[in-house]
Image (cartoon, rainbow, N blue to C red; front, side):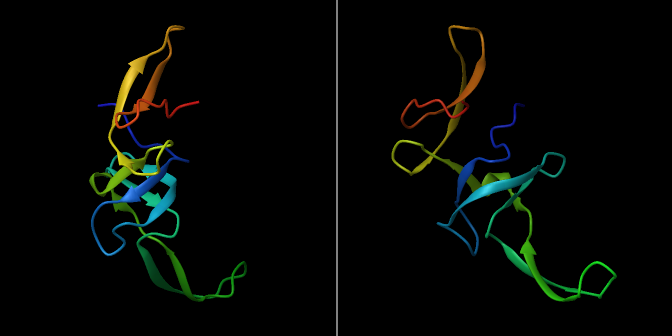
Length: 105
């Protein structure tokens, strides 16, 4: 199956404690079907001091399942599904099914 969510995409959260929030995808973990979204699903980690960092309680993003994410339509900033189509020059691109707008540049 082709990956519908990629690094740099703007997504909205469909379920969970951060439902309704919008963020940018920082990383996609394809093996686990999860993604890291900026400012979403924040957790606290107690880290030991090392030579490079001071340690203490660090807040960072935890992975969220791809089924709980939806693309944000570039036209009206609402959640949309993603489809694939081929352009006239032969490129395969992702498009928003809500508006028909091409997501890939």
